[in-house]
Image (cartoon, rainbow, N blue to C red; front, side, top):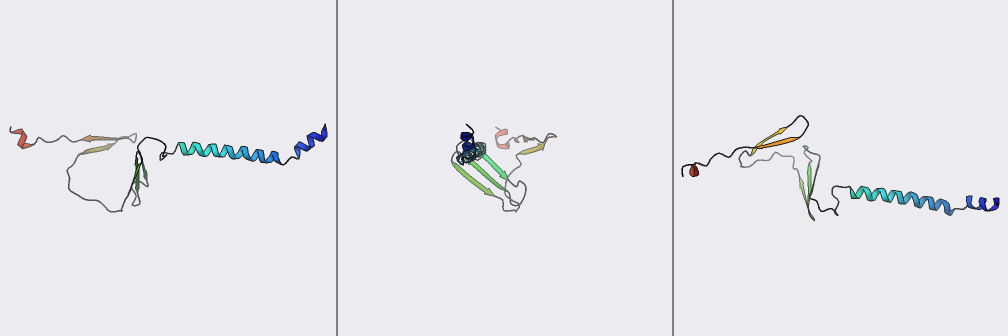
Length: 112
């Protein structure tokens, strides 16, 4: 009986089986990481990822369905024509609250 036990201990295929088990665990961990990635192509949600926020090399990647759009900051301050749409406040807990401004009554429609 000791002869059979010694041959099992020296069997090189047992170490290969252990390596296969380790690789299966690594593959399972990678699949879980891919499934939890916000840019996962298999989800149906719209996703926006912002890298380096507030810095000159900021980049915004937005995915709507199967369409992926990239916006890269040029590092320059933008300008243009427009009107003030409202005010944003940062609360003590870090959340942001947007308060739209009231539209002024159009003089042409107010006199009618």
